[in-house]
Image (tube, rainbow, N blue to C red; front, side, top):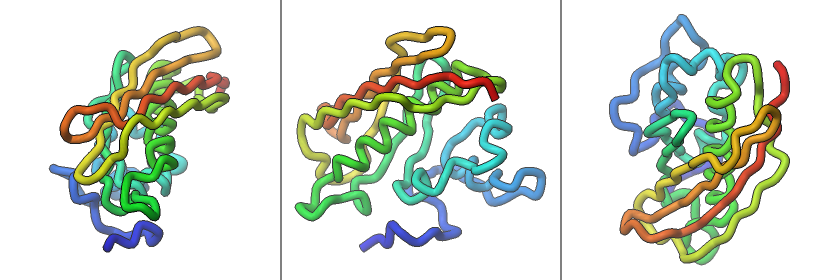
Length: 169
């Protein structure tokens, strides 16, 4: 059983190629372990990826304005019936949408979520789920993204939509 509530120095099991901490950035090791590209490290200087991303074991595979992809293990993120917790799916979706909005907004804007809608289609049973986030609307002050979460079999587990407001830093 995984203790998903205690912050550990270990890396997520599915964070291939993760490196250790670097004195040049207080969260460098964490950012590398969770797949944040080096050019985005400045945006995470104050808080890293956040403790929830660590607890859920989210690892980013791709971050561009057009698409953000991340994985999350089912194990350790299950509800009482032994399936993926719907709140974990919602947290994955909000994380992807917020990172996508940050990628679009650039260094001078920070995203703040104003709406999240999540529909669960089938249970996540084991292995990894993958979230793929794509923009629906990229405006001056608002962004809206759709996030599709699939199981290892490629079947849709969840669909979410998030709207973020872009605030001046």
